[in-house]
Length: 477
Image (cartoon, rainbow, N blue to C red):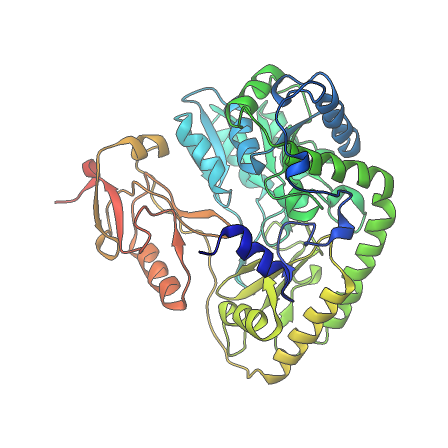
């Protein structure tokens, strides 16, 4: 019988290189920790403080993080960005209140709305049609919606997006605050922004009230580690603390917290030189990949100042397959099987190679070689596709739909019904369909296309993706 530990150990000994999270990239030199195992896996014993009532070493660790990121206060989240997002939304909006959510937010934001029975309004990202990747959130759209719906208590946006697009956060913050509302920014993929001027400005410097960052995504820290930054007095500190305790284990892992503090301490001491070398490596890699003839490495010139995009994260290598004979999924398979390079995400029309300060030149050189070699063998083929969020008709609030009586019917026969479940592709975990939304013909066409291309839908309780739960009251006769 093969155990999970045995399988992990076997995989670690292969030559597979990770262009995916966690940010330490399985590179021992990127982490300032030794004996990462049973010898330091403890519980709340004397001298080691308590995360939920921190007065000693854990309080000092979180204060260190706040100083590093230049915020008022930082909370550790050992339940990743998910726990921090749940806490942020819960603390910022009263039960049953109204919230404005960017439709490309992570599923955790929707779960928070369901748990708190919030009334949800949506704002949609702008559409960049050239490469089929969604852009940013328009500040003017935010202003318009807040004018029309003054009962909204908080706004949640994702910046950067999974693909590295950054919205005009400073302008959005000014608008939100003019309306006397709270701005929450899911900056899970931007924890590294503060460490080089070659990266976009962090939301903590752009006026956001609450900012969530995943340390494990782009910094050398273990999976499931994140921070929640309180950057203003607009959200009550005690409420935030209470909800962080509710959404996290009462026995947080000291191994995870140690990796977070080790990451913070190392960045304080060596961050400047490490990030200088990392940025040089990114720039050298991008320069060499500019030689692609058929594949295309998306650059700032392609996206900035278009579709409400203020900036782009150069650490994310988004390789477009527009105009060539393969899909993003097929390119990802070639990189995995022929070159032992594992991508962070595969989409219909691109792949995403996620880099971090933990990367090595050897890995980047392998990526360059693989892409240039694949590129030389490809044929041109014009294809038309791009995805934008379908503006599904929301007929019920999320929590109401999830709690309503429902029944299971074939997915492909569900047009016109009210969904009782989420549907999303993971990664990135952005819902394509939300409970309470009317299931449209276009949504079903998209699902058929995704299944044909080999993508696995998630969120449905039927793992075979053949049926969906729909609200009984919404059934058409």
